[in-house]
Image (cartoon, rainbow, N blue to C red; front, side, top):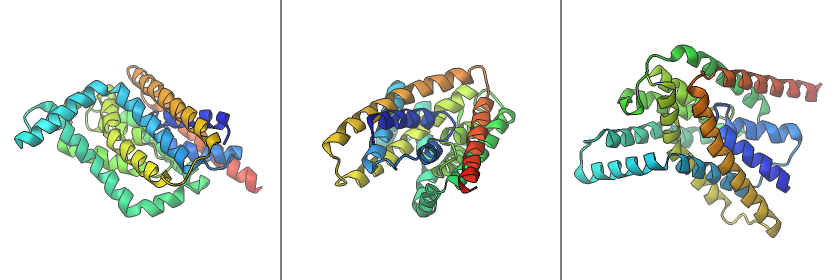
Length: 271
């Protein structure tokens, strides 16, 4: 892997992790379309850590507040504040994805080797994003999330294990259906993504331990990490700014275009 590849893949991972266009789908289709070799496992680990750093920095204040409220509720054995309640709901939303990942992990792993499946799932993501404009039912803030909302949003997040399905797209759409404002739905989406991204990062790091990285690969890891962190941070800011005035439809058009391009490339390569 060259430094240029590392930078481009790092930017791709960071931007598409938070924009509702499926990071996993892009990391399958882009290297495949360009004929690049599959990135080293250690590279996957560091770019995931980069996106984790991005969301932690952006929501540091919220994270500290929610973590403190959660710990206090554990010590007191009761939930008193809205922040403690929200922290527990975030935990609830993380459960479906963890369970589905353990049960169907091998099936989802197979999809990462199928550009056809990824292209089709990008089209599905586009449909969900386009329909989300009709799902908006209210203007509730993030502390208004109910238990049933947390379960629904977590269930939708679990589908994003499949490459081509956007995690942020699924969860924001579910948040809108649950009555959250666009800003609140995005905020909750990023917060519940923290356990998922952290878990994926730890797993990839664990798998990469012992794999070994040559001296020439160290710089690739560094620039990939920095590129993912910077692009991820900017992607969060961009999405929140877009959602203040617009729906998710522009991202739906993008997903349709990306999925259609992937299908066209498959047809052309086999023709």
